[in-house]
Image 1: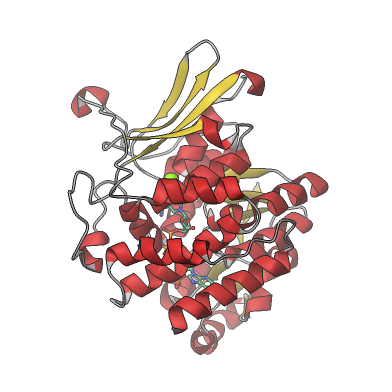
Image 2: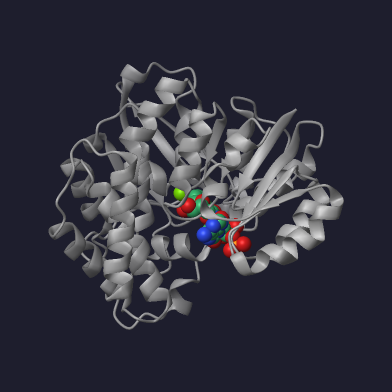
Length: 378
Ligand code: NDP
Ligand code: MG
């Protein structure tokens, strides 16, 4: 029986994780749940899954959640520090990190230090502090399994293979809502939030539309797998059926295919290396008929170049990239900047950035705050 600590339980990944728990009551139970502000759903989830601990980030929702759950014997917490310490305070052995943004970094660090297994959807911490997270994982002998579908695909492709024989990782990208466009001017948040294949939270949907999601995933893949940055390629695959590929030294390629449903990679992370039953539609290749692949348009979408450069420059460049992107997406969703302004803000931030080579966690937290207040407050 795996006892799960699910942070971000009210979001897209969080809900899919709970669906898996529902399907396998003999394998999983919930030890802790954490949400941002959706108190009604959090209460409903807590009453169904009976965790020992519940955390609500929004201070004005704390009383409501407490009133609803305290008589049920469920402890209710709030506050930033309490969220960060949720893994070590909980009896659960596995953290499912489904929170959005780099606020998940402190939670990951706490979980590693407490020796919990990590199933990671929240890619931003690996982007901003990959070297530190890797070091901590090694020091505490903790396993981190990716939930991101591309990285789960790679994990599946390399099972039983010698890492030295991997020549290249190829991440697939849907191309987002604006694939094939000649211009990106005048795009509204509502248009950008309309993803063709995946149903996801707002931030990652905008990241997919700008292709920055793939830039972040390139950095994520670099920290997860034994390849140098120049051996991670991106190919556009509009059907989102091939989730990624690995090429070996002899030119042979392995790919992982599946419907675009995050329950598959979430469950694989939870049960690795097992493929447990999962009740959902099955992939019908004949019904799909055609799978296509094309080069990304790096002229119109500069995200891949920006991410590659940040990774090559190293130090805190990827953290600055991630922080600027989070702030820029927030501004775009509020209607305060243009869609193309996202690229501009990120490039300006990186151009003005003074990198710290051997950064600490405190450096990353300070950088996040500094960039957020500079961009969002200005
Ligand atoms: P959602 O926006 O759907 O969910 C985000 C979750 O984080 C919600 O439960 C939200 O709570 C919670 N949250 C937001 N702010 C805070 C806060 N200040 N404190 C505590 N909790 C907070 O996002 P997704 O599920 O789509 O994505 C989650 C992560 O997974 C992201 O990093 C994304 O990049 C990654 N990912 C997502 C995929 C997907 O298919 N959705 C695919 C691959 C990766 P509430 O709603 O209650 O405010
Ligand atoms: Mg992905």
